[in-house]
Image (cartoon, rainbow, N blue to C red; front, side, top):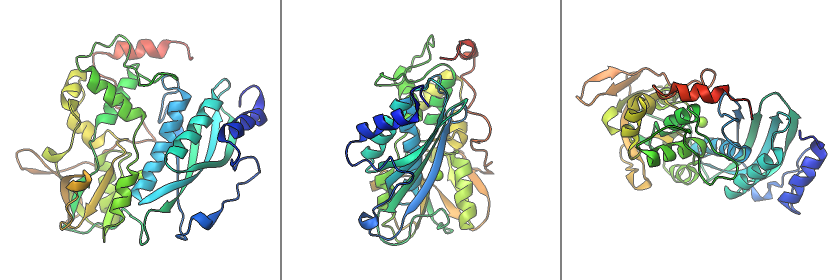
Amino acid sequence: VNHDGEEATLARLAAHLGPGAKIGDDAAWLDTAGLASGQLVATVDSQIDGVHVRCDRVAPQHVARRLVAVNASDLAASGALPRLGLLALAAPPGYDVDSFLAATAESLAQLGAELVGGDLARADQLVATLTLLGVPARRGPLLARSAARPGDRLWLGGTVGESAVGCALVAAGGGWRATDPAPHLPPGLVLEHRDAAQRALHRHLAPTPQLALGQHLAGLPRCAALDLSDGLAKDLTRLATASGVGATVDLAALPFSADYEVLCQHLDLDPLGLGLGGGEDYVLLVATAPAHNLTELGLVPIGWCESEPGLRARTADRAVRPLESSGWDHLGRLCPPAPKGRQEIAQGEAKRSPG
Ligand SMILES: [Mg+2]
């Protein structure tokens, strides 16, 4: 992909990975002796410039870490732990492929996994696809989204909506430069709540897969789980449909980060709307029998499953209304709208020549 070609890039990656590296042949031989459970769990996910991430704002190493995290989040939702990764990377000329590969390998290593192969190609825009193979964290059935039953309580593994605010801040000019330890806010944006905005950017650009939580949940007798990638409403619809149940969400119980609502207000964003449909929260949504109290695992109860199909929301005044399943659609827009009244910043940024 670089001007000095694929061989040189791979040689540098091999040097970076060290003597045990499994890359170099046409295909990787995998030693299954360490995978004693007899089961592999496989997932694949992409980061595409302009769809999942903005490469003019976010440096290659941070895109690579995000790619690993969103894949690992799918394994977390299955109660599995990552072991082997295969990367297909198509990048435009001049893209820092070396940094991307090194960060991919490092992020995988941090999660106990290894980069064992892949493919490099040239493309007009970045398309990075990681296939991640994992092993079940425990013996017994894997977690699945189809295991919910009427009467189950619904739980969330963390706060919702914050990532969507981070996405809006990227759209307005925020991002993460190669050597910076933290993301930067949109230039020229005067913010009273800089810490909350900084956290929202970090949440969006560097999600944390809930692998330890998935491991705990896999130990429950029966538990439905999936990771929130497309917004709570849409992902809850998936869980409910797969399980043949309906669900009611208690809106007053939705967990939000510190200063999230005041930050939304400041940016003219709808906190509840983003909490239900913002997407890319990468926390686990869980349904399990009411006998199991999951607060000790850090989960928050947000509602319950019912035999009556469909999604409902209980509002603060205890009225129950139908809930639309309008989560974020990866096939459509990149982000929620940029903060209102600050579009001039976003447009001014968009006009600058590609870097
Ligand atoms: Mg998922």
